[in-house]
Every structure is written in structure tokens, then in C-alpha cells.
Amino acid sequence: MPENRPSGYARRRLLRDTAVGAAAVTTAGLVAGAPARAAGPSPVAAPSRVAAPSRAAGGTRRGGAVSFRWWGTSGWRIDMGDRTVLVDPYLSRYDTGLFRKPFNPDTRLTVAADVVDRLADRAENIFVTHTHWDHFNDVPHIAARTGARVFGTLTAYHLGLAYGLPTGQLAPVKGGEVLDFDGYTVEVAGSLHSRNPTWSMAFPGVRISRPPRPETIADLPEGDTLAYHIRIDGGPAVFFMGASDFDERKLSGLAPDVAMVASAATTATADYVPRLMAALDRPKVVVPVHWDNFETPLTNPPTVADSDRERLDALVAEVRRVSPRSRVLVPEYHTAYRF
Image (cartoon, rainbow, N blue to C red):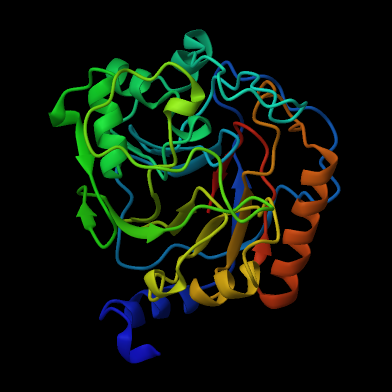
């Protein structure tokens, strides 16, 4: 329904689809101090160079090239020259029994400060999709250390207060906002969390006021879910999601160049990949995320449970089936990708 799309949609799609030539998604080494890459990509991993969109005309990148580094789950570090933005940075990766069973909801929240401080050494903004521990656990620590502003739901706002962050560092959003950061803009989209095999989820709920400081992973509820569309001046437009469900009506008109797409943990969401690819106007590059065992160290190749490997393979195959012109890039940890 083109008539319902935002006025900027046609221009953004034109710039994307008429980009001159075929640039490349390139890998540009590792974060300083990160472990060396292990030999041997996974069976579905893309090669180090795949076809991708070129830069849109009419803009210049501020402060140098833009790189995207995956930190497991749906976590990303985006460097734009000397400016850094984080999405769902979870680096502590401790054991809750989720992958080895039995799962322990009373697992204490902890921060691996040595790892977090080394990798998340700076940030101006942190964008939180939802507040489960594997997305929010390290956010208050990083924000307190770097002074980064935290964007998220009202639940993220109240949890930030519970951790002692000042209100000036907490920016509640709900979807529909288009925020200008002088060099890049961020459009916030209301989204949905994925469902487990019984069509429910772990730790549902919201925080409508400041709670006591969280102590266990059960103290970090889902708290509603968001997605983010980051458009970089002179660079790509990139979509980030943190859970494998969505409201396609709220994605209409985004048309990102690159989409970081969460792997579905179950089949509870109907027609997940076909609907998502159609809603995002079949991005030129699709990057699967949230398929790794996020309770193991950040070393390459990522550790993947057999069932998650099957789901990842199925996601890649389905993207290639319903959006054959999209290039699929299965990322490795810490590697700097440039689109």
C-alpha cells in the first residue's frame, strides 16, 4: 500500500536501488585485543566479500569509514570515525543453564567488567531493543562508564534509574520517533518479542515505575520490544531487531540497505521470513543474528547448538528463497564489516 508509506520512502528506495556499481561487504580485521579468528567458516557462512549496495549519493561520512561489529546475540558496535553507537551490547555472557539445562531464572546478574570495558571502551548512544538480560545486562555499566545515552522503552528507562543512571542519560522511546544526531538519524519502530513453543515468553512484563535494583535475570523482564533503523549520512541504512517477531505495518517504508535479522527460536510466528522480507522491501544484505550460544566466550567460530544451527540454516535458505536478490552474510564475532 504505497499511499500509506512515509513521504521519504520513495527517495530512500530510489537511492538504494539505483546505487551505481556493486560495492562490497568487506571485513576489516578485529577489535583491538579481541581473540584471533579461528580457521574455517561455518557451512552457511558467506565469504569475506559479497555483493552489497554502494554508498548513496549526496552525503559524506563524518570522521571516517563506518564499520559494524557483531558481539553475539543481537549486539552490535557501530563505529563512524571517532563516534561509536551500540545496539544491545551484551558481552558478559555468563551461564544460566539456558543451553545446557536446567535453566535457572534465579541466576545472579553479573558484569564481566574486564571484557566489557575492553570492548565497549566508548559510546555516545546505546539503543536497547528490549530488557531481557541477554540484551540489557551490560547496558547500565557501559552507560555509567562512558556517559552514553540509553534509548529504550519506558521499562528500560525505569531499570536505568534502578541502576542509578541519571535521568539525563535515559531517553524513553516507544516507536515512531525519528531522531537526528548530526551525521546519522535513527528511526524507532515498535516491534514484538518472539514466542516460545507454548506461544508465551520468558519474563514478560513491564516496569511502570522505578523498581529495586535488579539482582537476578528474572528481574529483567521483556518490557516491550523495539527495532531501530539507523541511516548514516553518506553510508548505509541499517535495520536492527532484537527478537524474532515484528509488526509489518510499523516497518512499512523503511527499505533498509542492510537488515540484522533475528533467527526464529520456534515456529510460533507464522510466515516469519516471507512477511519480514516483504515488510523491509527485500534488503540487499541480510545478516542473521541471535543464533549463537550467548553463554560461551566470544571466540570464533561462534558456538552454535545443533538445534540453533538447524534454525540458522533454515533462515538462510528461506531468505534466499523469498528474496533471491538479497545477499546473506553470516557474521563472526568482532569482525568489522563495511557495507
